[in-house]
Image (cartoon, rainbow, N blue to C red; front, side):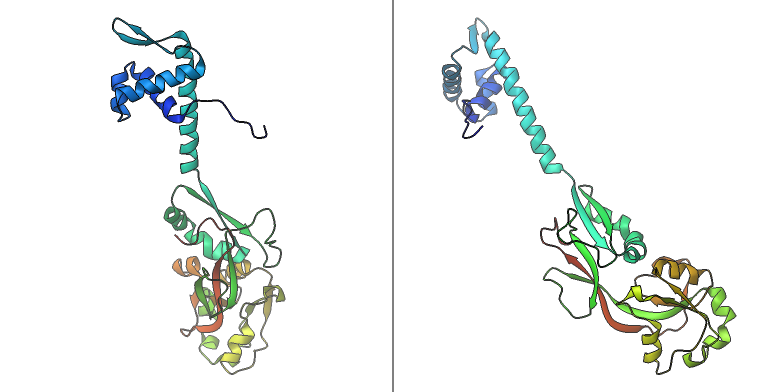
Length: 290
């Protein structure tokens, strides 16, 4: 196959022959291709010289295809149809946008807006979510994502095309039943919440804000209250919605819980932590932002 060249006529010659054969008329072929009859005739002579056979024959009514001409016409049409089909597939093939994020972001942030994201990108882009734990994503692996969601200190610049999705803000949240049950305690200063059960994340949730930070901001020690520890923030919120304890609510992660009334903020003052969630395009991403 090295340096192989196929002895085929010029594209303009093939187009002229296909138009003549399909229209069974030199005149109509010239009109269709916006050229002269003499130019069409030159292409036909060139094709016959190259093939060594006649492709057209004159009759009393005009022209007709010879047997060889008809066979070549079918081959040319098949080739042109294949080229057009392939070109159409290349123009309209669906692209794949791969988004890498933690399971928490996937469940609480991405899934609630997934339908809107797909509509915004259009039918020619399919979206895939790749879940990772923040450390196991191999940037050189076989499934390199186009966009990575990552938590960084607010104000940093992870990349030129990076987009800040939200600034982390936290507030205690609880189910309506839990808030009513511990209403008297929760109405007091946080330092007196020693009887209020809390839900906390384990050390695996490194990087996100904790109860320690919230109580420190309110200038009081962390009350010695009953505590349940979770490895997954999604499970923690479900437990809070079922009235198992008071949880740290993160803005952007509570949409469904707040909308349907399963959780509500205990205090009105959201605490901005200095952390932000960024969407960071990787090298070679199929697109940046719709």
